[in-house]
Structure formats: C-alpha cells, structure tokens
Length: 125
Image (cartoon, rainbow, N blue to C red; front, side, top):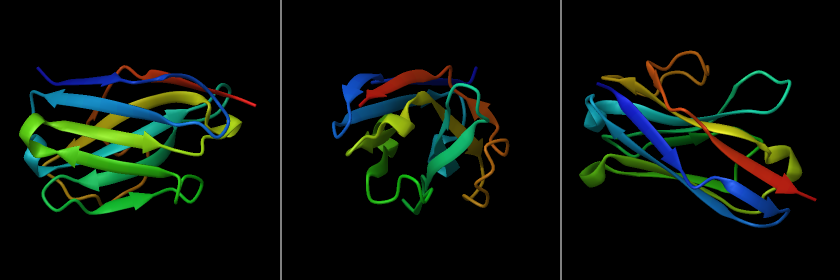
C-alpha cells in the first residue's frame, strides 16, 4: 500500500520560513522522482520542485527558485521542502508526489503516480 504522508504546514507571516516533510512507503523510493506540487484556491495544481532520489538531481519552478530547497534522505524515505522568504502568493495546499522507477523527466503536475493528502501553507502579509 503506497503512502505519502506530509507534515509541517501552517501559518506564517511574509518573509518567514516553513519546512515540509513527506514520508514515503509502499513503493521503490530509492529509484523515484519525488516532487512537491501546490494548489492555491481557484487555481490549477502546479509543480514546485522535484528531486531524483538516486542522484539528488533537483529542479525548481521559477517562482520559488532561490527561496525553496528540496532535499531527500534515502535512509528514512523522506523528502523535504525548506521554504524561506515566503510570500502571500505561496499560500496553497502543498502535495508530495512520486513517480516510481523513473527519472525526473517532466514538470507536469499530472505526471506522477502517487500523491499525498496535502498540507496547508498560509502566508499573511
């Protein structure tokens, strides 16, 4: 049974920081593309960042580049997203996602096999 369990969301003022974590189980985490997606109210889900678990290759959306850092730990099947210099436009539900047995070939939010339940991030001005 595949599980992606996110934690770490919350409310913060603009300029603040939050760290999201996602613990994965039930699939071949060590050979996967792990990603963070987000969906703001009234908007489509968008891709934020991804990391290849067997190489630590990373890529970021332009909107978060230089402010967010994705990382992962194969020993505990966990991917994290450190979010610094948060802006009100970062407010969204953030989802952990995975594409098993694959490199990180796509930034389409619909490309992934598995999704977490989401965690709310709210940034106030």
